[in-house]
Amino acid sequence: MAAKLSISELDAQIEKLKERRKFLIVKSAERFARAATKAGLAEMELSDGELDGIVAEIAARFRKEERKTASGASSQAGRSADCGPGTPAPVSHDG
Image (cartoon, rainbow, N blue to C red; front, side, top):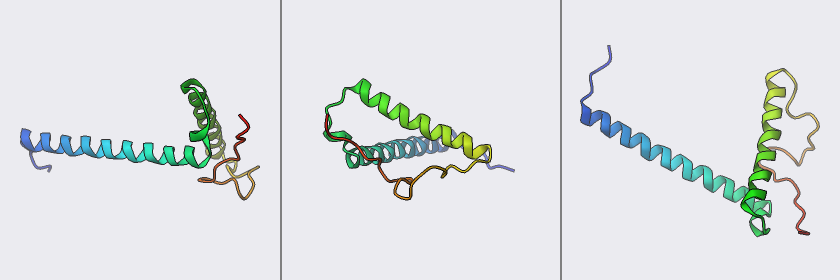
């Protein structure tokens, strides 16, 4: 049987969860910023719309791979050894 919590205990738990959520969002943002910098996107003059489009394309690619994996196909098919998770794709800086 679960112990009963007071309103103040529930409020304290809610505040802890809110702080944890903020922390996770910041860590996620830092992770994506590092990846974008590593790939050279930070130095490119891209509009917010262009950057949103690039990120949407990447997300669609990985969603497609997740569906393949879920249906039994290997998500590694067609990938070269230097193009795994965490490895940025080659980026042209020609503008």
